[in-house]
Length: 270
Image (cartoon, rainbow, N blue to C red; front, side, top):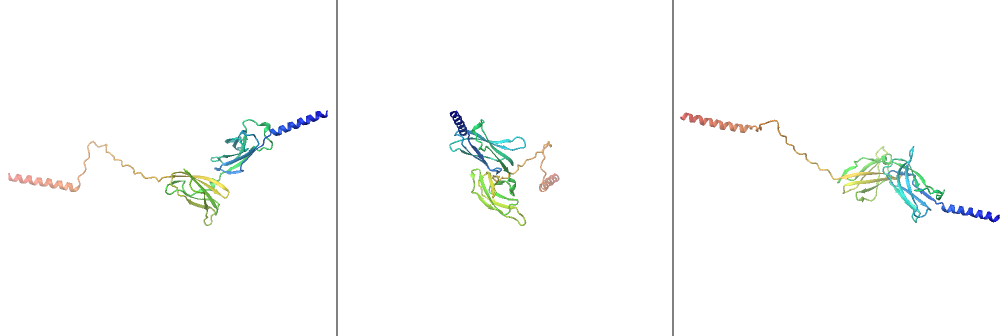
C-alpha cells in the first residue's frame, strides 16, 4: 500500500514537471505614449523554441470593435528576443494596443507569467508647429524653415532634414526667440539645397519628436509670352484699302493740277 502511494505521488510529480516544461513565457512591451509619425517600437522576449511563429497586431481601440491597423510576423531565432518597428504616419491620435496572435491556440504552452498585450497612446503634436513660410519653394530660395511654437518661449529645437538623396545636413539645433509680451517661440533656419524634390524636416524638442513637415522644391518658373492672335474681318467681301495720309493726298492733288494746266495750254495753241 505504501509503495502504491509512493508511485502515485511520483506520477503526479512527473506530470507537474512535464506541465512546467511545456509552459513557455512570452512578454512584449511598447512605449506608453508616442507621437504620430514616429515609429512604434515593440520589443519582446520568449522561451519558445527556435522557429516558433506568431504575429504582433496593432489595433486602434474604439467604442465598438477594435480596428486592426497593422500586422507583422515574428519568427523566433536563437536570441529568443525580437524588436519590430511599426510606422505611425497617418494614424490618428487616440488609444491603441499591440497584441500577440498565434496562428494556432498555444493552449497550455503559454505561461501565466506571459504578457501578450500592451496598450499605448498616439499623440498628434503637428499642431504645435506654425509655419510662416510656404512649403512650396523655389531653388535658389530654398530651404527656408521659419515659424513659431505657441507657448514654447525660449528653448532649443532640433531639425533633421532629409531630401531626395537622403540626409542633407547633420541635425541642426535652433534656439527660439520671443517677442515683447509674447510667449511664442520663433525659429528660423535656412539650409541651402541644390536639387529639386521633396525635403522632409523632422522637428524635435525637449519632449522628443514633434512632427515631420514636407517641403516641395522646384526650379523657378519662367514666364512664357502669350502668342499674338491676328483677327480677320470676315464680314467684308471687298478688301479694305488703307486710307491715304495727308501728304500723299496733297501730292496727288498737285499732280492732277499740273496735268490740268498743261491740257489748258495745249488747247489755246490750237
